[in-house]
Length: 353
Image (cartoon, rainbow, N blue to C red; front, side, top):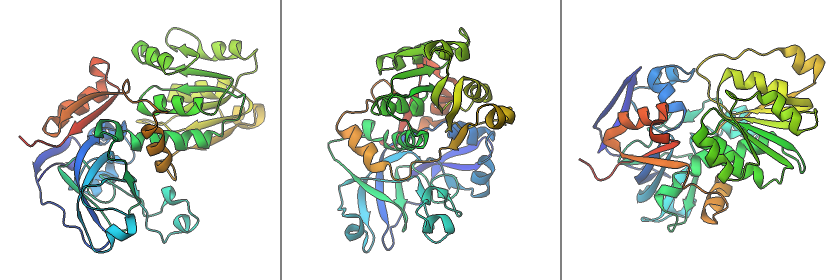
């Protein structure tokens, strides 16, 4: 089969590799779509902490966003996952060890071993075929959910986890910084919490228009307006209750700390290419803030599948581009540089060239 394989920094190769053969409790799938996460260009350029992790596991097939059709089931896999050949199925992006402290506590997204598809563990989904290993968390996906929508399950699951970590209450004023796929999915999920005010911030005017269409009451371009003052004006000088940070930009973190009310909460989900520095005196002595992180999508895949299947979350304005897998480099560039107003870029492995 053909796949995009990571060998090192700026060394990804589209090449022929051996196809998967599922063993006990393993599932082989034909990949219908695979997606490009904000982390993927950073892995390619070596600008994120986990880039070296991927290089240390090289050669490894890239990609942790995928959706597939079952083509072969290893012994016991059909019974365990209630699957048969021809079913549509997705595996969560991490394959937990189920033995470490965190896995035993049920916090499997914090697994010590931390085998993430296409980065630190099994081969990923930028391939014609892939294998869900034993220990994977696998979910059956409705066949009627097309691949161009089902590919959103992984980022939506992450967004749901982030919103849940943000602990939004009825009547809260919420600010979302960053309008990539995660931020725009967070917007739609946060609206289901019925906040009294929701504000979306991003320097990209096109994305702000989409945020407005998806339900944001207020949108702010921080390059044109003082976002901290604007949020305070909207909240009678108090500041917002929750910030969901999905941009991965250090300046957005600083602004979040300033725009939060006392005892407000920052939920950080962004993937950073550089370190961020903030004044911890504001966090402690001035505001007594809560800061929580968000990582992966623990326990949220079933909700993501449900929301997409029922149309509660829309993807048509978020999934903007699709390329043949052989054009992976163009796909990464389109995603990274936001060419042609790109938001979520996906790839289709078949048909082969």
